[in-house]
Amino acid sequence: MSERQRPIRILVAKPGLDGHDRGAKVMARAFRDAGCEVIYTGLFQTPEMIAAAALQEDVDVVGLSILSGAHMTLFPAIVDALKTVGREDALIVAGGTIPEDDIPLIEAMGISKVFGPGTPLQVAVGYVLENTPDRDNVSI
Image (cartoon, rainbow, N blue to C red; front, side, top):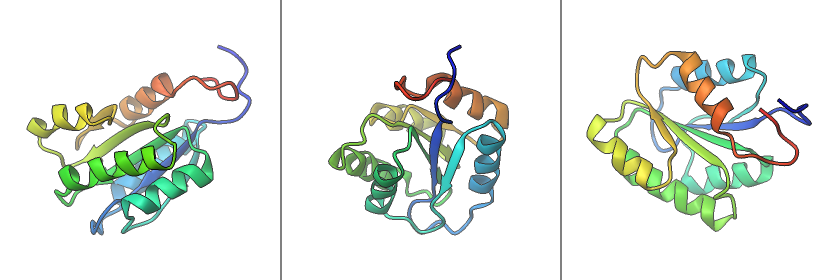
């Protein structure tokens, strides 16, 4: 392992009208405890707001948390918004109450991994640490 220049930067976002953020806050804390720098967007984020934050904060990872059932509408819009601002290089992961049948479709649209309810924190954190894109100024 090479010496880390800076910690992995992860944006934890709550897209749409989902008002429940306990899981997102738990994940943010787990990523912070693992040495990541975490930017939490707060509730009610639009795809454009998430993409703008990813660009402005120069994040390595975008973590989406959704419980509302609107993932098949919001996730493609977020992927497109990230491409529009030139951040298609970021690793995108998602978590929440997402039906198993939707996971292959979600991964096909560019979201690297979906974590469902009950996923151990160390599994989600481990995945991010192992799969963050290689960048000159970040090592994992």
